[in-house]
Image 1: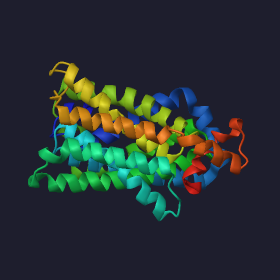
Image 2: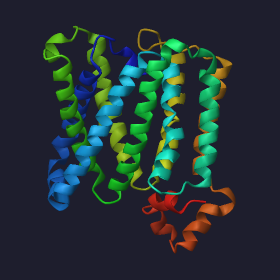
Image 3: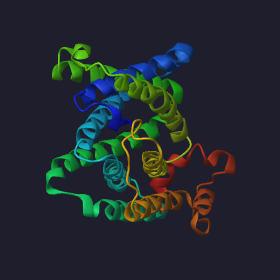
Length: 302
């Protein structure tokens, strides 16, 4: 929703750069000692792997910014939910089996997306759709890699490094796209407000919570639950004044599509007939240690 408040003349790299650096600074000030300890413990492999994830993050965010310009807020949000559909392909490519719950979630989310978007898609939106699709693929790969990383390293330090690297990569891309950098930006209070809100609430707060959450859930859990953000986007777009957000017209198709996305999220965390608990017992997991090692669920599968 905040993406729509950023003027279309502002480079996507600029938004990614400024908000990433701002989010990293907000976290670095109180937690710099913790970051230093994590870097010493993890060494170059930790830093190098984090840089790779940051590169994926910066790239899929840029693709999303460019692709979203072809859609209204609602269509863009539904399109990005396709990450859920792409994730099983990524897991299978990595030779990880996908659980039954995830397949059910994918079917529900895909149905919701097709229902909501079907009548509104136009041929002129094909390039934007391709960009969004590529962004979804990279985002799925990023989530799987980040999920693996959080099981081995301090999540807070990982979040700080990710943001710092993402900001650096975006700065390079921004400089290549427009060497004038900040001098090219239009004077806009709306832009400053959007960047400030995004940097604090989305980058520093929400994304850090996501990194912590990934330590105790699977990549599939996280990806499907992320898709619920579309419900908040639609609700805020329908309720808040037009001067704050881009208004959303809530139609029956959009409402039903969002409901199916929520149903998909519930299906992902459901425990059908105790199947999940049975798998944990087969692996010898106790309730206390099942959560930290839940990341192996997609490897065991249904």
